[in-house]
Image 1 (cartoon, rainbow, N blue to C red):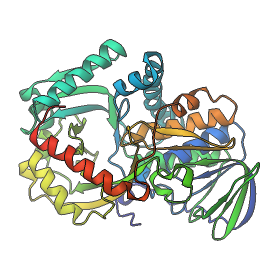
Image 2 (image 1 turned 135 degrees about the vertical axis):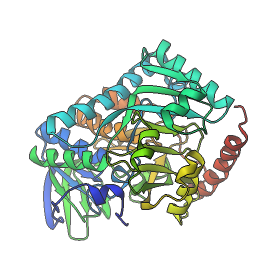
Image 3 (image 1 turned 30 degrees about the horizontal axis):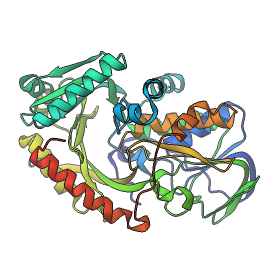
Image 4 (image 1 turned 120 degrees about the horizontal axis):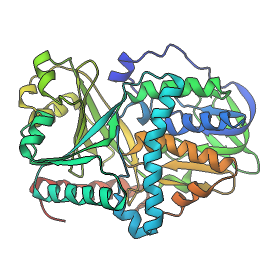
Amino acid sequence: MTTATYYHAFTSEDERRPQLNGEIDADICIIGGGLTGVSAALHLAERGFNTVLLEAGRIGDGASGRNGGQICMGYSCGMEAFERAAGMDAAQRLWAMANEAIEDIQVRIARHAIEADYRRGYIHAALNNRQERGLEEMAESWSKTYGFTDLKMLNRAETEAATGSQLYSASLLEQGSGHMNPLAYLYGLARAAQNAGAKLFEESRALAIQKGATVTVETDTGRVKARMLVLAGNAYLDALVPEIRYRVAPVLSAVAATAPLSADQASRILPGEEAVADSNTALNYFRRTVDNRLLFGGLASYSGRPITNAADALRRCMAKVYPELSDVVIDHAWSGKIAITTGRMPDFGRIGSNIYYAQGFSGHGLALTGFAGKIIAEAVAGDAERLDMFARLPNLRFPGGPARTALLALGMAWFKMRDLLGLSK
């Protein structure tokens, strides 16, 4: 996997962690060095557990170090899905946990002095009347049902002033969501986890798991024996754990970072420094970095095929939003995998009595991944109430088994066409 991202080029991390060699005993073994795994390692080590984390590559090589840096309130499925599936009381608690997930980022940044370029402010942009109505309904739900009032609907002129683009018909501006450098944040959490006593190993891919009262995880060069196991690989676990493999489907997304914009461009493009996402099913999302680059993501691929010529394709998408950037230099372009569930609800739970997992963040992972590590640590320590609330959500296996990718691609083709035509629900 290439690590030629904007974050890796401009985020300092000199430390290389050792590869696992030989056999080691632990209370907890964690597979996956992204935000879920590192957060779990930090919370567990702070609780006094002997914790070992195995990362197949280097910390942040997966989605946690490759995403667009958008911190999103709520959940990808929308709150109405929780209201229907679990009832209003559970939906209220799930909303509170989503807010806590964002607050936790701020707490950890302050506690560990992490330079993550964190900023609040988010614009949900509409391309047609149907999407405008959807944003109005979301704003009403958030304010009247969940008590979040720091939001404002913007008309076309206000949206143009806020984004610097004439593409959108309206938007919703809210101050709960935001953006940051996700890799810098992850590096800061990893250092904090090590300082708390967790042992982090890189280049240590988990190859096999032997279940039992003691769980054994095998790598090429060693093994970990632990009382409990945490699976935090999300879309990168592949076939390692058959029990949860088909509860998610991998989706590729690509991101590009431009060369620094001119002072004039930077004054007009996102002058309030908010992040933006449009309201399409396969959406585009973008933000301006602290060094005045435009970070632009999209090109969701549900087919399983690699995204080719991502820089040129994203430049064309970018030019629809900002025609003046049609010839902009792209300094970095990369792609990575996220995992989605059938209903876009996060999938947290257990396998047996001593294996915990969290996956399927469905595009809302930057805050929820770290929170998943927190509530897994709570469950390991004996308080599983919040983890069990997620585990009861009706996440189903994707139909078709190995054919799920082809079926998903076919279904998404319809949703993309609906977005293109501006069809009603």
